[in-house]
Amino acid sequence: MRKQFEAYFDELNQHEIEKVLSFLSEDFELHFTEYDFKIDKKGLIDVLGWDKGVNGEVSYEKLITEGNSITGLFTERNDFLKLIGIEELKATISYRFDISGKIAKQTYTPLPGQPSFQEKMQPAIEWARTNRPGELNEIYPQNQIQFNQEMAERWVILLKEWKTATQSVRD
Image (tube, rainbow, N blue to C red):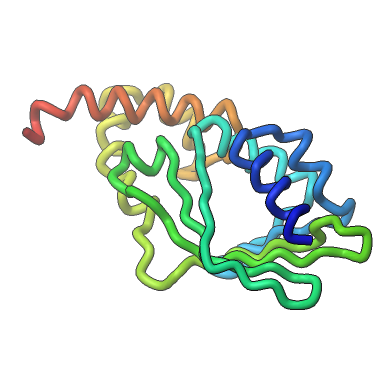
């Protein structure tokens, strides 16, 4: 199980979406406990695309294996977070494996006191409302982020423009 997990994790950080999906059971479920929000295997494709588009990297430590589960402390870094001023996000993540060795369930629980990306991105949103309203309307409809690769790439471009435009003001 540990070798299977490590192989999965290598593919995850290389953004090999099809290979990552091959490690998951057909009835896979990702559960974000903070919002009691769940994503199935098909929905995960967009989330993995987002991670690829923002150049995401996840590391782990303190892995504990119990029965058919692996749990650890995970640290996520990506260009989107960095551009809005968040160095990293930390969470406890558990992976439950089915009898065939595939990952059946992933449970994501952020550590207490993690920064809010919604709060941190507000200055960029305010800038974009004035300076790039058309783009903002497309990538942030009804004040919602669409988590897929195209939107991730567009967000990174917009955030870089915001940083460049406001850098001299902040310095």
